[in-house]
Image 1 (cartoon, helix red, strand yellow):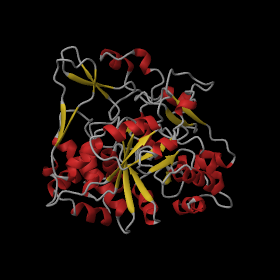
Image 2 (tube, helix red, strand yellow):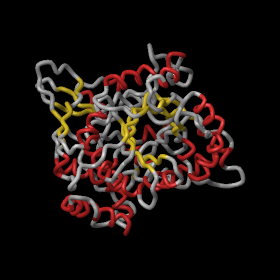
Image 3 (cartoon, helix red, strand yellow):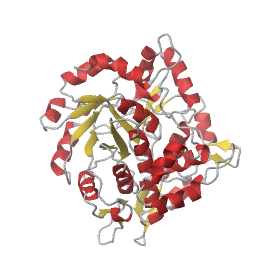
Image 4 (cartoon, one colour):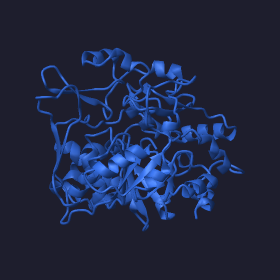
Length: 461
């Protein structure tokens, strides 16, 4: 669920109830340092940081980001943009941030906790995985791409071995040296290497599931089969792209997963997208699923990290069934369709979008590309148009692009303040069935994660 919406308080609550609680690992370094700047370090977090195996890293990070609080209208101190140059300080922060998030999610119960990452965001992935593993993460979930290398990476990290992955670059790399992303867990590990978590690949089709089962570098422990009605990034339709009357992609019969074919692979699978009632849960089990993945119902619960004002707007609109969700083919610079809920005051409003200065100062979704001289640069279709074009990008690719990095952080209440007068506007993502939260609002103004589980539980065998 975006950035820091499915954060540790929600994951802890869900795991405590006997389900798999999942934290978002996207932008985890920025989330970690902005929390410290807003809230400081409480006793629980302090205790967790004291258990981190490399205390010199903790001292440096806390000194830089946690030594003083941010003023009400002050700017957040930022983290370095992701780069292929393997800076130890950046890797250390990824590791520590993921460790703290997962450790807090796992505190006080014996339940299971997972972390979700986007395959498209390559540079932070390995150190983030290692930080989560140091905290004992039980599951890793990855989609928005083809995570064929991740199982083998988890194997190597669990053996304490260095990991090298070639940087994915746009352009003809033939005959040219492509940078390698290198991470050595020995710098930050304790006396024993962490255990390997189970790996679940997020797929939209049985074709991709078969490809991953056969070609991955290690064991795939299961699949989350995500339908195109789910929130966040969706898989593009198979075949030529055609648009509906709202400008969203048209999905056809080829875009429906063959659950029987996935079951034949012999590993568990979970179904995601539109799971908002006990009836939908029962249908998933009848299709052979081990369970379901639920996002939209939890997005508006009390424990979620969604900004309280945005949460209130969604809840109010959902009561009357008036939340509109569009599948935008322009919002995300990844090129993947992205679900956008129409919420007043957010980037779904054309006027708000037009007033936002184009800036790319976080860079998680930048693509690496080869310059004419053979060196590597980074660009994003959401950055200032002339900058993108000067880097060889196509002008038409910039039209309608949002800065998901800044706007999803704003949706979780961590929007950057610029020149003390402008705060980054949010973008809200949800599944198509977000209005179904109205069933949880009968006779009450809000609801808890436990209420969601109780609402769905009758569908379980």
